[in-house]
Length: 472
Image (tube, rainbow, N blue to C red; front, side):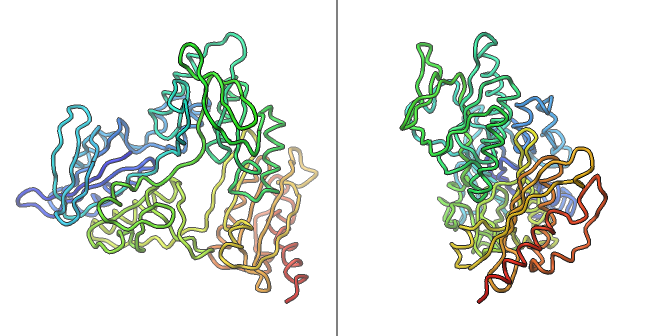
């Protein structure tokens, strides 16, 4: 997760590229290598950790035991990259980028040696770093962030160290995607789980009324969720390990603490080099993923901001789906081909045990922030025909623009089969459809999969009525 990859041609060869890799590593080198062989393009990649090309999004499921082996999360090993004629330098961190001199300074974290390496083309993919507030006791043994495979292993070791005697208590700080996923993981590991959430409801990526559904479901699973709870310090016991988490109101006993507060772009290295960052701290790029103002520098993955196609503003969204698309675009352009990344509509799915959570597009406060007037509609349905065995409730909330009826956003909370329905809305958002146009979509139907009117279409119909009833 960190580093810079450089491509520098040895004497008598073609151009060279360097790559700085992230927590959701996009694969620009393999794509570039498919377009140009070693005699045309030398690729040097720096990676500061011990792992390459793995799914950080899968770490909660490895911790929970749903994924049995750590290596199941690894898409490409260092050896596999080297087999593609990529000079991959592990445990090596890029500490400085000299844009004018077209070179990067690298630190070998094993030997302590530093050296400069030049580049013709530079790819920055430094990823994101977990938010870790400066609180007393935050670095105590037993307090864990979960961003890398190493973090996941450290957490598993910590869980094993707690032992099986007496109550085992886990406190999760934060109730976003990582927070709720780690709450599930701790529950599956046999811990009593308390989630401390600073917000009004869990899952701030949803509107509060939909977040309340998540809160109720988590309570039903035996997870204690405390909203409006600001952590003030971490307390330790005589052995120096974490023992309690303090908020402004009270303390909560803890044998292990998991930080699920979110991530920030790891763009400081690039910012210090003079590259342009956006309002959320991520690097800004053009459609070809080139760093703004630089023809020979590209950036992708969790360290960049992306254009929100609905809001018309940039956002920072740390998702492996975007990172891999960035990598394909960057690899094509570095290798002499052509590719662009137009932006996103903000689609994400998650789950806590059997509860599925999905959203795409804008929340109500997002629409207000960009000056859009809107209407909303919320419906309750089932993911199958009501008479079919296994039918479970699901709630769909839809947001549309006032007067025009243009779809602005959709949120879904439900059981099996609920979350992926958001993909229909994501396509409609990308196409700029109105909710009235959505009502005519020819979606698949059979009782095991959907009611005659799919819940998304039922929500669209109700939102059409809201648009018409809103007047001018």
